[in-house]
Image 1 (tube, helix red, strand yellow):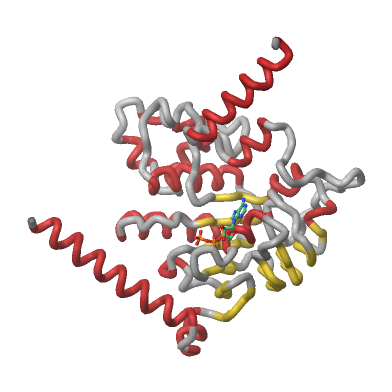
Image 2: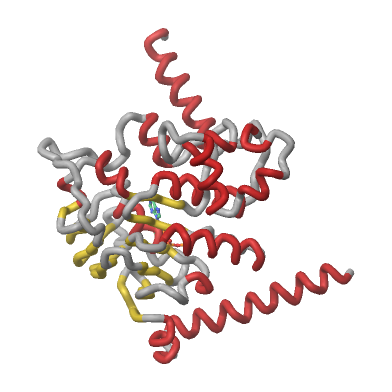
Length: 306
Ligand code: ATP
């Protein structure tokens, strides 16, 4: 009984933490002291980043053997450039970011950073060079200062405040009676989706990685918040190799290349203007989103007048 109670307690705590959203995926893997799917090769080397160029080469992947999610995806993100991935829900967009961060291994094909297969390097060295702004940032039950500084161990208060400024969340923090010492998370102040994302951006700015993965929030933000977030994202991705997983199209217009992923393959690729001229999938998605946005704004206006 005694032997059993420890792991059961642990699993119970872990389950509660996950279900109440207290820990993020990376922290969860750390807690388990073992990634769920991948382990370092015995001879794994340190990833050496010179430029930070990313290459997906004929990547196939499935979570379950009977359902293929990616069916031969090939693209490059040249050093310092931004590539955005768009496509219908469930197309496999976020899966690309999980594979690059190596939460899972490809079934076949490869993913390389500066010519090094991510499977041949240590996960610690890989994750050190990649900054991830996830869809839904999970905050630690601690102060805002801690949550921002988490990106860079030993960061000074000045650096934390600078990052908050660049991520455009400093103004909001200034309105809180306890400022940077405000407790957030499940037991503290609840932040909105946009505020949480800006904390994640500040965290990433402090980490200053050469490679960025921006996995946009699925939920629609109001236009003002979206513009603010876009401005800080543009700032953070400047001169960094950036892979944007875009659930909304308004954020991808300036990308160096846009990939339209559908049913696990790249169906269209090019710059915004090229894809609009194609009048294919991207064009149709754009028109649909524009109509939805217009309807949302009209509704908001009507609601404000009532
Ligand atoms: P969205 O725009 O809705 O976020 P997406 O294109 O980012 O979609 P993914 O999250 O990459 O889609 O998921 C692709 C497919 O893989 C989906 O059908 C999803 O149900 C499935 N999937 C995602 N995660 C897992 C998992 N851990 N186990 C099994 N299937 C999964």
